[in-house]
Image (cartoon, rainbow, N blue to C red; front, side, top):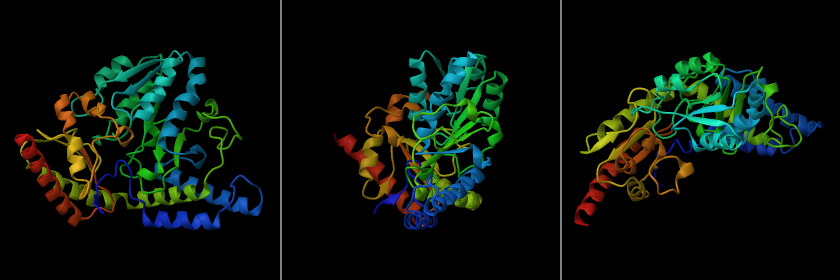
Length: 382
C-alpha cells in the first residue's frame, strides 16, 4: 500500500479505539435507549463515552450532543438556532471565507430564509482579517462561525480575538473543531458551540458531536424530528459501538497530544524543508500558526491533480477538501487567500499523523521530488 499522508481527510484509526469499537459491537448489541439490562449496558457505555468527549474539550458531559459527524453538527448549529435568532432580531450570519463546505452551505440555507450571510475575508496567510471582521460583525449578527484550524492549509485562527469581537456585539461564536480537536488545545470558554468528528482524530467514521453551552441548549431546535433523543436536539438511535470508539479516541488524543505533536511537527518540518528545496515550490498559509502535521504546497508548472494522481502508487495525498475532491475547480480556500488561480491549481495538501514514521517521510520526500521533476519534464516535451 502507498504511504498514507492524508490525515486531514481521515485520520487512521487508533488501534485501541478500533479494538474498543469491535468489542462493543459484540458486547453492546442493543438499543441504548431501551430500559432493559441490555439497553442499560449500552446506555452506560454511551454516557461514559460522552464524558470522554467532554473531557477532551473541557466541557460538561451534558453539553455534548452526539451526531453522525461534524457536518451534521455544523448544520444543527444553523438550523437549530434559526428561530432563536429570528426572535432576537439577529438575522445576520458571519462566516469566514475559508470555512468547510458544510458550514458555508448550512449558512446559505439560512440565507434562503431571509438571513444575511456575511463573509469574513482572510489575509494572504489564511488568517481572518480582524479589521474587516470588526467592521462587518454588528449588533444584527447572530452567529459568527470560524474554524479553529483550516481543513486545507491548517492555519490556526486567533479564536480569542474573534470571540471578543463576536461577544462584544452579542453574537454567538461557533467553531468547527474537526481538524483541531485532539491536535491543538482550544479554550472552550471562547466558544458557545463547537463541532467535532470522530474519524478526524483516530476514531470510527459516522460519529461526531456538537458542544452546546449549557444555557444555550434549551434555545435550540432539532434538525430532524423523531423520538427526541439527545435532549431533543438529535433524534435517532445512537450507535453505541461508534460512541465507544469515539470516546476512547478522544481520551487517547488528549493523553497523547503533546508527545504526538512534537514528533509529528518534527517530521513535518523535515519534509517541508526538503520539498522547499525544489525550485518553484511555495508553502501556502501561515508558516508558524498551523497544525503540526499540515503542509499545503504549490509547485510551479505542475498541476496538483496530476501530481496527486502520479503519486497514487507511492504516497496518498490530496489537492484540497475531500468533500470537493471530484471538482475540477481550484481550491476555493486558496483563491480566497488571494493566490493566483495558477498557483492554486498547482497545490497539494499533505497531512501527517500519529502513525507516520521517519522512514515514510524519507520515502515520500523522494517520491514527491521525483514526481515533480518528471511532470515538469513531460510538460516541457508536450
